[in-house]
Image (cartoon, rainbow, N blue to C red; front, side, top):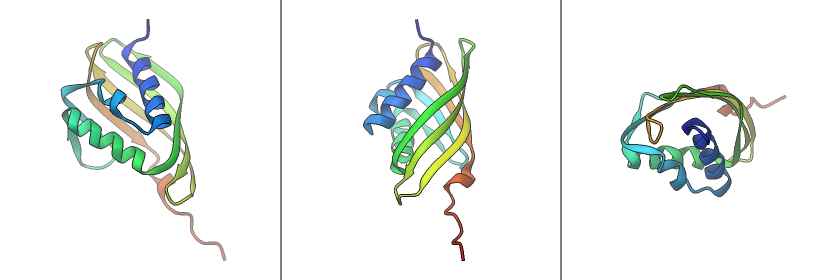
Length: 126
């Protein structure tokens, strides 16, 4: 039987493939929080929907490949590489780590840390 971290990883890949975050959002508890490298915190299922839709809106295509993961029963850690194409056609590949807090059924907190420099446009070559 899959633990919640494994279920989360599968739901994220399905969201990336389909462009529909609803299955991933269902894993979040009503009072959950989501954070990335910005100072903003998204809250609840509505916030989770906004967070994941904003994530998808950055890309023409994206796929997260997980290299490592662990689940303690209340925390999950995922090390990953995202590969795809930004909306402007620029290819992107970047690495990061995501952490979930959960009760085995629902995610109560999600935090993600990644290489934000990968999103900068390369300088024009002379």
